[in-house]
Image (cartoon, rainbow, N blue to C red):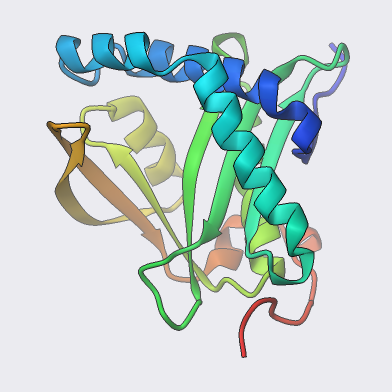
Length: 199
């Protein structure tokens, strides 16, 4: 099997990212949220809607490259098919700008349990560390036991469980924390760079 390639997402990738995100999200969370919530998401959240969102995000990133404090990665196979996606950014909840969040981490079903998830977390974390992020939070549906075990195996510490509103539905989220973001990154992936986007 040829190795997978992990790279920065580009605007041209937005349509494929939209399709990938919708398909993998629906498949991953079918058993984790109430059926009526899942069905509403399936009905309203089309690949085109998702693609438009990714395109806006990528355009904003490219418009101000010197202020970027986000890392958007895709993993693709040798045919160029997206098989994984990870997105992280500085947290809006931290005025100091040291806290990062991974908001999306999704894999094609055929590529789970093969190390790709860990590789994507490490790669996006390295990107955030390069941008001056020092610590990390990842939120996951509390009902997603497999994902929770994955983050715990990576050294994440459960810091809070909280409810949030998902288009009118109350869902529970478990938040895992790494106080030192570099604990997630192989030493050779951490590069000394000046902080970006802070005074």
